[in-house]
Each structure stands twice: as structure tokens, then as C-alpha cells.
Image 1 (tube, rainbow, N blue to C red):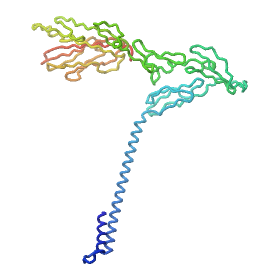
Image 2: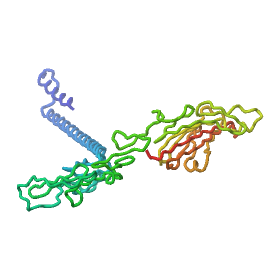
Image 3: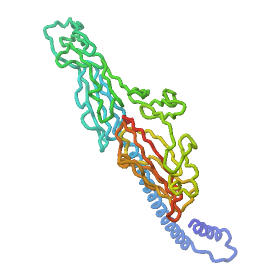
Image 4: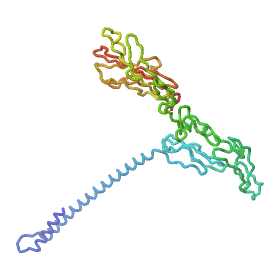
Length: 404
């Protein structure tokens, strides 16, 4: 379009500068008409360009808006942060959905509003934001204003009962307590211990202590059972590995198996089965001695026994895979996996195939501890339905009495 305009102008200039060649040049009216056509063409292209530019801007704004909404949705997956009330404190740091926070007031103040608030699915908090106001128990209008800072006599003290600190301010009695204590009912002169274990031990936001909560004067502490140490936060418990730390009494011919809250000393003896003898080839494996060629009963006995030990917590969730048995170098065309053992083992375990060469022991129902269960997984190798070998894997499961 710019070339057309340039050509028209060049023609006009050429005719003005070189009239001697006798060529017919377009008249001024023709040139003006051509210029108008070029101008219309340029205007049409300019309008089309501007419309395309506006459409592009709309698309960019739409993409930015959608990206902003997705970012907001990703970042706003928690409720808004809650502040502790003035002259109070907040218990609980998580602002995720279904989590709960609790509020307490400092000594001498009482809570007004919701003591606990839960982050709801709508990402809003339940209840109302609490406040802490001065706890006032009585008014003494007969006391002169000059006694504004007079201290009242203290009540009898004890480990879970402390005297309050009361002062007269402009004729009004104000009593406060030490941290961990609260005014005892209507008796403003007595402070009683706050039992945090009773208030918050089973809250929706989680237990104060993983195991046991012990109330103490003005506070609380967590304890762990024998076989566990307290973690750094003082609230959880971590199992002590008595085997790794040599805190066990296992003999040299025994193997130490660490369990949750304790340990087990185990010793593997090869089984005594009629028509076959076994020899220990490793601490946890026994293999059958070669059978005589004419002893068919011997060839039908298991080729090997393997022993494995596992430690789990009480009430472990199910279903889940507990153990896998595989054939490294199968000789036959078929492998079969089956569960041996008594009724108790079959109530909690089953065996299923995960692929052609692997079977897995599945926990199908939780086990309440303390308990010790044994499960036997048999792998049979066949060639055209003729048994080539049997291999027994014995798994002993030590279940703790605790769920941690």
C-alpha cells in the first residue's frame, strides 16, 4: 500500500521534472483520485490492524485473569490467619481445613467469645473472634480513692492452688493469676491450676501428647512408655532401637530384632521333617539335603525354609502389602503361591500374585497389639502340572501394643 502511494508521487514528480520526453502524464485530477484511493486503502488496513490489536489485548487480559484466579485458588487453600487476642494467647498453628485453634487469656482476664474455632470447607472460621477482658469479681465503693494501689491479703497457697494478686484501682478490685492458673469461681482471692490435659488432650487439632499427658502445677508435661524417648518438641515419642544401641540381652547365637517399644531375641533352628533332613546355609535359611533317587517321599518335602521377622505398630491400616516372594531362576512353566498356617493367620493375611514370578503377603485386617503372628507363604514350582519344588517362607510379625 505504501508502494502504490510512492509510485503515484514518483510519476507526478517525473512529469514535472522531465516534460521534454513527450510522454503523456496523468492529469492532476487523476493523481488526486489515485491518492484518495490509496488513502482509503491505508485507512481500511489501519482499522483492521487496530481491531486485531484490540482483540489481542482482550485475549491477553483474559489469560492474565484466569492465571490470577488459579494462583489465588492455589494459595487460598487455608483459612485466614487468626491473631491471638490482646492479653491472651492462641494454641494451634495450622490453618488448614478441619484444623482447630484454641484461645486462652492471661491471668486476670476472662475469655469472651469462642474458645475454639475450626477452619471450615468454605475457608472461613467457625465461631467469633474472642477477646480477653479484665476479670472483675467485686466492687468496693467504700474504699477511698487514695488507696488506689493497696494490695489485699493473699489466700492460702498449695501446689495446684495459688493466691491471686489483687489490687484496688479507683475503688474496683482487680485480681490476676500466675500463668497456668485461673480465678477459682467467684473467689477472686484464689487461683486454681488449669488442667491442660483435660481441656485439650483430645481436641480436633490433635492431642497435646502422643502418649500420656501429665498435668503439673501451672502447666503439663508429656511422658512416653518404656522403650521410647521423647522427641525434641516434648510431645511425641520415638522408638529406641535396642539392637543398634546394644541395649539388649541377646546371646551370640541369637539375632536381635528391634520392635516398637522393645526387642526380640530370635534363633533359627532347621525343621525336623520325616523323610528329609535340612542344613542351615545362612542365619535365616535352611535347605534340604539331597534326596536318594528312590525316595519319592523325600522329594515331596519343601526344598528350603526361609525365616523373616517384621515389627509393626498396633492397628496398622489395611489392606497393604507386607512381604513379597519371588523366584529368581524359575525352572518350570508354572509358579503357585499359597498361604499356610492356622485360622488366626488367615483372618489377618492373604496371598495374591502381583506378577508371573512374584507373590505377595497382604494384610487384610488390622491387628490389635500386643501380639505375635506367624504366616507361611508356599511357592510351588511345576512343569506340566508335575511338582518340581516347594519353597516355604515363614514371616513372624511382632505387633506393638502402641500405635506409634
